[in-house]
Image (cartoon, rainbow, N blue to C red):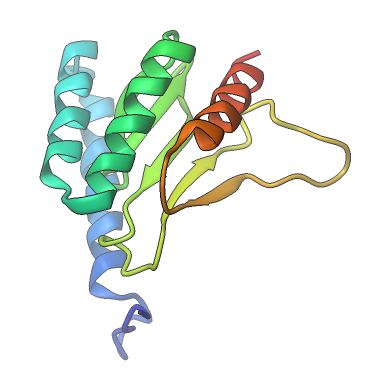
Length: 146
């Protein structure tokens, strides 16, 4: 699949929607009236709205973050589930369907301390989440929150 670009703006409908979501998230943060429980509910709703493997993967990532890195706070980021440390997004999930991709993505921002030499991956394609993937993501989360 490929995302069709709008000839006028250069952004696809999906990309424009993600930017609109982010603008609303920033506005809510600036108003300062969001509570931790609101963010948790919002992320749960985002995950529940997904279907198929996106939903299964997002649920597994969410459960693992809560277990392995409970200090990370869930929040919506570009309309997708993300997890923040000290108010900054540390890792995030992108559903395949939303971005018309063949795989979902688990990504880490520069806040994450997953450095490994002079070059390292910061995003991972997810097709399934079995024991090996769980072990790898668990180790990355533990390292990321240091």
